[in-house]
Length: 305
Image (cartoon, rainbow, N blue to C red; front, top):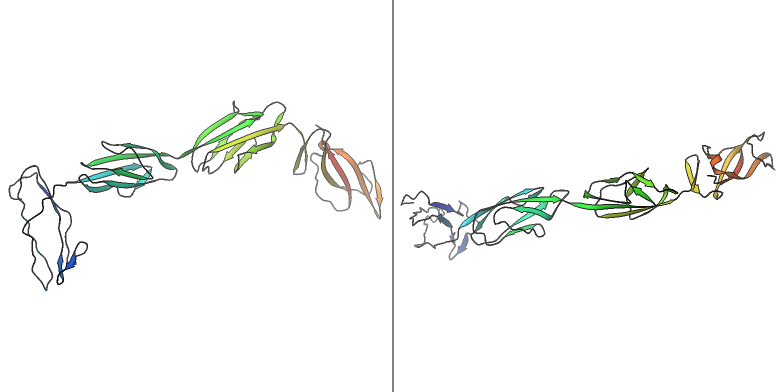
């Protein structure tokens, strides 16, 4: 730079090497050419001198064109800072009035929709993960904050409540767990034997229901049943109306001296088999209903609330 202008800057946008590649192309009798682009940034007239050297050992001549082409396009840099995601390249160069794109990828649990974009002159739309800058005419810095990817889980209780309401809705991050507690039954109804609709992949325990690894909106309806009689025998629990038959037969061991206490007995070949008709289901609570060797008693359950 011969005029001593300290504000002038010279940028070499590409250069050749010992083994030219890229824009180096053969033409005419094996000659090679390469165009080196130089950008001069200045606010006043300035003279710039260049020394060009190089070439192949078998041909040491380097021919320089007599004239230069004036290029008025300026170069700028655009920087994108992102929270809760990644960008293909944080800073990219671009020539004046050209377009530029950045590819945005959300972190797990975050989404592209509804992103917050700040920065002077920054675009306000993010389409399919691509942020596009049109006709860039200055250096720019944009800040993008991706929002959490959330879905809604709605639980409705029929014939009961969840907390103080019949319906509760929660917004949860995709992939997380939504748990609802405090399910209670109205008078005359019970939590057991409830009917579930839209509650797939849920876990029910006591007065709670949980949905793990939620990936989409869920609408779960739980209809509580009318209160029924309940009877337990071993690990099995049955429900039914008072006086109704369970349709289950329980097999007991019958001792040789008939001390089981049942009213009827019947001689069957060489041993005794004690047969009873209906017996109240509640009376069987706590009884082991498993198989037994030896003589047997058959009992049909009846519910008694």
